[in-house]
Image (cartoon, rainbow, N blue to C red; front, top):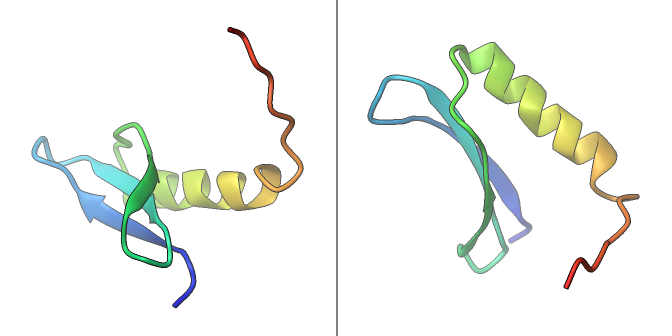
Length: 59
């Protein structure tokens, strides 16, 4: 099974996404969005931008 994004409603009625690894463990989660469409846009942004993102060590 590959990693997957899940979109769900949070306790306040907002929409969030979480990214789960192939083993089902959560590896990233979002802020709360007011619309499902906005949450879907957040997923699309991560899908588009994360693969080429640099890692910056600020320690």
